[in-house]
Length: 203
Ligand code: SF4
Image (cartoon, rainbow, N blue to C red; front, side):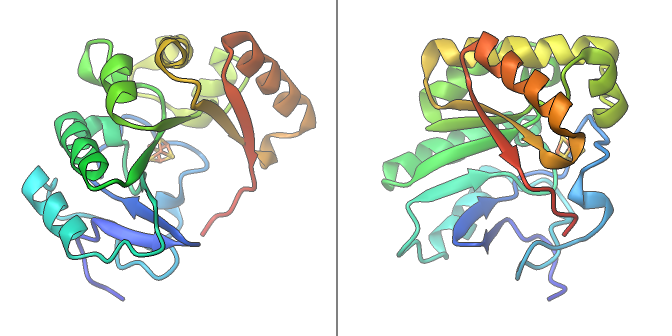
């Protein structure tokens, strides 16, 4: 498929919402650098940032039978489109569909304010890419535009989310190695959040 503007797509029995291509990072593991699609999706490069009406139209035209959760993910950082993210989450909740946010955890820096409460009030679970066990390694992998303050901001966001929900997790990809994974597991424990190791896939 080569259609652009794929706002909603499915992959491995999950529904994903691709609401923005904006992101302040250039992660080494980002699939954006290796492919334009995920599974059967069309191109996930959007030619403009969709407003809520466009996201709602994509949701309304999709048959959610057999799907009970939608995941904000895609080719960009969802908190870069914060108002659309929250409005869409509210709309999905009204339809009885659970939501999950996959995020780089830099929403506070992106929006220049604390966003954890609003996210946790409206989204059922939050999955944060931890990526590394310290700020130097983190920056070497994630290359955030905010620089060295990013790692601590991301940890702070996770701890703030944990105040409002138990459904918050750090994720790492398995390619960072066993020793680094264990250090990351300890950080998750210290922050009181869940921990998940993802199998890295470049496509
Ligand atoms: S934060 Fe996500 S979208 Fe942004 S570069 Fe990293 S993996 Fe890609």
